Image (tube, rainbow, N blue to C red):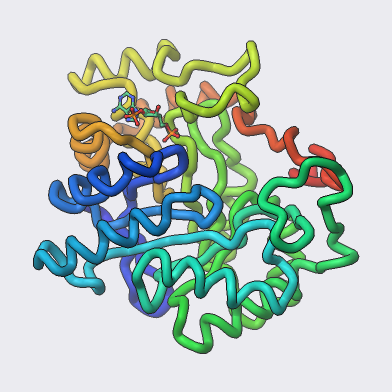
Length: 314
Ligand code: A2P
């Protein structure tokens, strides 16, 4: 497995397991199986509602001697209702308690969207706050303090545009190590990727398979089916692998981390082995032409002051 090396020498396995939509009652066995077959990077978030069960799986895997804590990369994310400076550390402590860990490898601001405290998901615009109420740098200062305390090894963001990263880079003391965004051949985000490369910020691709099992609220008629794109199917046939594996190999060959979700043991194995597939420059070029700048998770569900324009700054 390739790793991404961080500034302090830490190594992040380039392919990890996504856990959004991995339901309670299922996710425990998924994590145990993933660890057994060699996954060493698990991507979590408080809002996925399954961290306690994932934590039990980690704890049992450590107790069974399957791996040591230092062999596992764990990412989690601060939810939108805990952006106020005093709320960040308690949210992190809840995640650490649930995951049964004493530190995270990486903690991300999940969205550049702010809710009132303890709201989960707002039912109306009234549940939102603005960046005037809670500037991102306020949240970031609290993230930095948790990093300085040793509770988090690296801090980063998710769903941040170039413009929001520029602002954060101007104000931060600890630079963001990661920006986790939707990324797949139909949404390649070259400009953002180049900006991150130039500023030593790694990029993680979420929904690399187009989040096939996303809830209906996130579906629209025009959404592309990534596994059915001609170029993806052709390259898969040439390598004698599945289209899904080519989608994952594309992310890895591009130097982004990638976190496919699966709850199925065969598919877990298939996805892990995709990290070893080498794509030629011609194949990468062929996939480049599939870009439509198409967001499957558009962000349109956010209310309050969050328009699509000011969410993505485009
Ligand atoms: P399942 O969890 O039943 O395996 P994303 O990572 O883009 O959110 O996509 C997750 C979706 O892709 C889930 O529906 C998951 O189903 C499915 N999936 C994951 N791996 C594979 C695979 N190798 N082949 C087909 N579908 C897959």
